[in-house]
Length: 536
Image 1 (cartoon, rainbow, N blue to C red):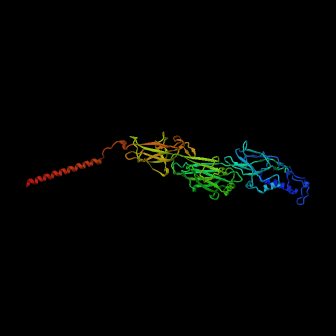
Image 2: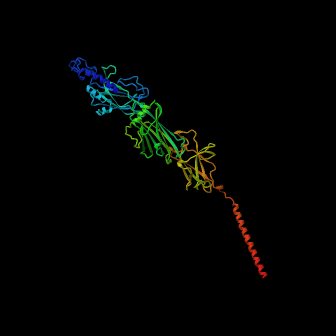
Image 3: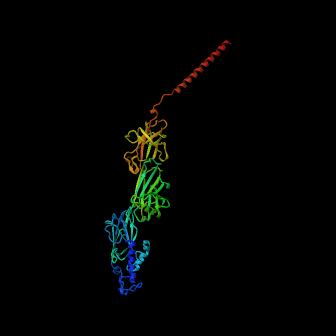
């Protein structure tokens, strides 16, 4: 029963009590024994409803749990079973019923005390309650609390099925005044608390993120529930710490609201809370809505299409290392977690809350450079670049030398040139899977190409690009793999030596000529000396 109905019953009962000039008790004396009130005759009859209240009788509270939508939940309950009530029955909602220990409904004072709480459930509970009785809806959203003695009861939904906003606590009396026969009591009362559905959806845009170091973006869309009030609303993004998502790249707004798109203001409508995951692998951004922000959501809700959109733009910054799966999970908390989870805790919220996960897949390529004539000989100093490319014909194998159009030069982790070390090895870490983008399988995966830009000294360059694909089918589980290939370089000129160049021959001739010239000079000088000696 609503608080309004309770007050109506109370007002009626109080009016009868004042007219009678005395409190109406279950064991009432005759009307002639009642003292006059406000000058009225003592012969006025008591309220039959109070006279007829049976303090020894037990009653029941039947919970009908239904899903709230935009068409139901518009009429206040009156305590009677309503065959026309609409909404999908919801099993799995847990309720507790607690009797208010300081409210005696067999007396007018008790009813006045109940009214004195002014509809504040917390105040009523603080005044004292009996032991809680717990039941969970089943068999079509029903939970029946029977064998209840006369009194006022606090009904609280303590556990809500995942994806729904819980109903607010309420107080209901056993019995209630009949809504139409005002001189009768209803001992078996019915209540129809509604749960509003709340879900969340996550998307990723990584089709323009071919390599580590590129931009990546995420979008979360969460429901604005069809609720009268929101006491709590958190949108959580749990992301891989190898992805950098700066605070400046996190924005929120309402989409498809009453007036279209509505901006949400940080520190006014929501607080943005960061946390490092206790697992050492993840980080968190939580948008925790303020009271003003929660009201803003309800004020702008048009229908089930109205969403809270959280956009996160950042960069895939760190290398793959062992795990090639970069996961991102969105979690919606439309009510306070029962386990006391806090946004700054670094722990994962309860798993039964609405959530949605996306994944980006990255792999590594390890190149080993060897001598084609002697594969055991590893070659250092070979340099490669990597491109997105379009082979002119479909390769028949991975790492095949093909004619290809080089579409875009890539710079994984900010590196554009990869050089083999003393072991002839170099690893290109952080290329996205060709057959997986935007969290979906790709029907026609593209290609990457290795281009050798510098050969080791004494060896020939590769004549054509080497096309390859990083695929789920050529990886191990969870993309924990390194795709390896061996690239063979041929010695210059196929290993054949060229003849000595002309420059060397000319040198020999010049040398020989010098010797001849020198020799002829010596002979001429000797002949001259002999002639001079003969003339003497």
